[in-house]
Image (cartoon, rainbow, N blue to C red; front, side, top):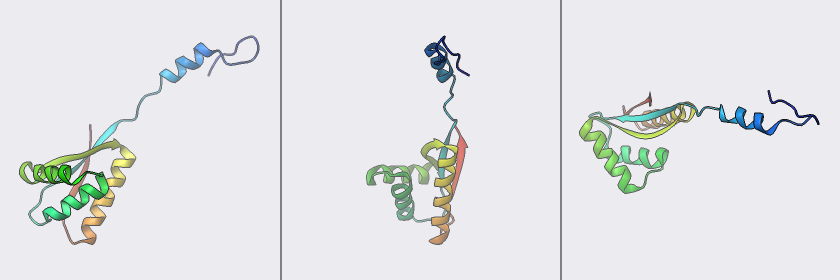
Amino acid sequence: MAQEDNYGRPDEKTVIEEKSKLKRPPLYQVVLHNDDYTTMEFVIMVLQKYFHMDNLTAQNTMLKIHQEGAAVCGVYTYEIAETKRNHVIQSAKDHGHPLECTIEAQ
């Protein structure tokens, strides 16, 4: 709690010290994994829709997923990463694809 000066106002030095103690939340990577059934076009659509990639970046990321087995699509706080993962999985199910999407601590 901030200390007060003689006039009942918070001491500015104490307030600044308290603010500097705040930590940034941990970040998580959202990862798409390759499979033998999900089309490349669908993966590109997912990358553009949920990760806001332009067409060229989405194509390059899709190729990395295809060639290396997985690729990081974005880095977010846990709640955002979880929401993006859930949207990707639901969209894949809705379109009949077994696309796997995971989140990993960075």
